Image (cartoon, rainbow, N blue to C red):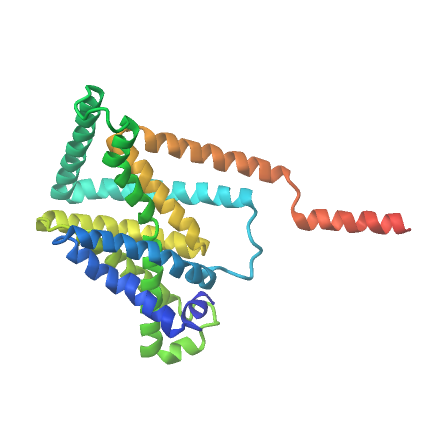
Length: 307
């Protein structure tokens, strides 16, 4: 059913938009290693992909299920975030063990940037940058881009879903008979998994396009982000909620930035907050009557009153 929804009723305009936010994005990312202007173009494409995501979200969601309440959505966010946070920790441990060059260079880069932020704070406090511009705005100029790019990073989930749809369209063209019975459970699941796997590989390698790295770092980075991309993809297909994954991706990147450069326990504290949120809402939910029960009781009371 999900494959059918993702591959039917695609207009030429939407198909063109998918090509721009997927293949076009890869080309722009590669060119950004030679031109900082292409980085600006890349960010513009990410912002534009939001509007493509509005369409893709409707294609992905399961219309057979009733919409979640606000509390259920918050609980689902907490659950998905925790699953990804735990999974990413496992993958990071694997990368540290398997790819020494990648983990060493990554740690050095994080440490150097964290030191530069600390030095900037000391120099700003000492008045070395003058007082013409308020310190608050100087801080925004220095670190604001980090959080801006973290926020935009969530829209990479639109890019990934776009790639999955393109791969499914290719499979549908090559194996049309297999897609004739796509309403049968499992008949096209193998193609969905292939699309997920291939999109995850492209997600992983796209994180190596913006700079030219040593091969050891490139392979380690590609494998690490492929693993993370695969986990994101599984969660996307499980929840069938594109915007939920966009938000989880952005929030995870923001907490990672805070942990790496500002306060190292941020991720742990936020994970703890998500655990409390999930457990608390589970307790509240267990004590609330489902809407169907409430409606049934209201009907019974109405019938008794009529009698």
